[in-house]
Amino acid sequence: MSYLKVSGTKIVDVNGQEVILRGAGLGGWMNMENFISGYPGCEFQIREALAGVIGKEKSELFFDKFLEYFFTDADAQFFKSLGLNNIRIPFNYRHFEDDMNPRVLKKDGFKHLDRVINICAKHGIYTILDLHTAPGGQNTDWHSDHGTHIAAFWLHKDFQDRIVWLWQELAKHYRDNTWIAGYNPLNEPTDPSHTGVVQFYDRIYHAIRDIDPHHAIFLDGNTFASDFSHFGDYHEKWENTAYSIHDYSLFGFPQSPPFVGSEEQHRRMQRSYEKKREWMDERGLCVWNGEWGPVYARREYDGDKTDEINEVRYRVLKAQLGIYNKDRLSWAIWLYKDIGFQGMVYVPQETAYRTLFKDFLAKKHRLAVDAWGADTSKVQHIYQPLIDHLTQEIPEEFRQLYPFPVWKMSDRVGRLARNILVTEYLVQEWAEHFRGKSEKEIDAIAQSFKFENCLHREELNKILQENASLVTKSN
Image (tube, rainbow, N blue to C red; front, side, top):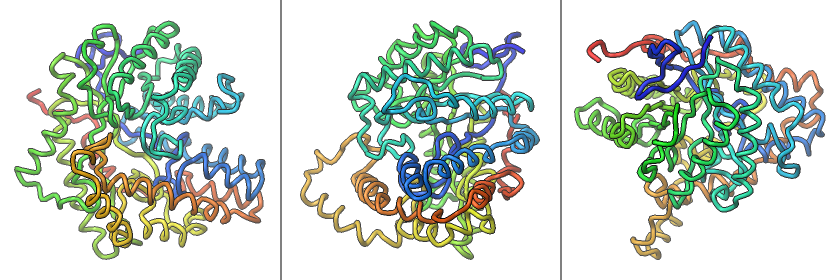
């Protein structure tokens, strides 16, 4: 078994044969996310709250069992049966060091990551290691697990120093593992200067290469992996490196224009994709689509419209795959497992976890407190006056605060008012659901996430299986 490497526009094996990576992200696992797992706010908040309700020992039991059950041999076996060959593994820096004890490697930091990498290797599945959070937050969103909309990672050098240290520890640990396709050093940066991120990439590249000359490195574009316009000629110094876009389509989300498959809609989807990879194409560089994919309607919220909505989302999925197949693109769809919004497999309502949180999850949905794919129809009347007030009082030339245009003014209000402020008041309510639970009951709740207890999103998996190795013949 040999390392994969980047050669020109392709990922290749030791014989120079092209390897097209097709797979999914293991989101919500070693970096938990609210819409994936059903909690409010950020992971650090629920961990603190749960320890306060049931004590440190029981709290650690729940999270450890959650990690254990979330991905097992059965998951890998199923994944491989679809013809998929790659899993992107997002992880939280907090598994490896503590903010109050920085640069000290936690004893059990590699426990679950090693386990899943080895399970995947056993089934012939490559993994890509994705640092999804960094101290201070490398982006403005909840999945950086820092609880604010200020990406302080770009404001404090020590935060960056700690990630350089962490990646060197990771490189020491994994440099001889050939089933790891590569390292994804930083997920979706949002650097307002647009230049600090490139300078940091240069630093992290050399820090990794000092220890590990073998593994490919996958670098996300700035502004949520969409913008490479300030990367200049740095690529000339970076060998065995690919560049990661995240190609979410507007048509795959609630409150978007319905996707009817018109020529104009296809052109808009194509242009959005081409714009993200333009810098790489001009220089003959390798592109990897590290995240993409629609979200899906849920019968408990969308009722009789569920199937109709999802048929449209599958058309979006197929349209994107049609574009990718022409370019022989490697991709990792977001995501593998959740509680029923986007995952290939999902935790059903009759499980202990979904039963326990049934009313709370309905409340979260009604209040639109998760940013990802939120349906704001039931609360928009509350926030619209604030948006109108800002629109009236702030001159248009001052409304474009970074990361505009990804965040418009209405998005910013939503992030700060719903997704940060309101969720702060819901964290304790989530944790209280565990009060009085025995260790056996806690274990049963965590077991809800086991593959054997999950349902499959059959049409999604069928489409992925059909496209797992598909490329347009003429290319």
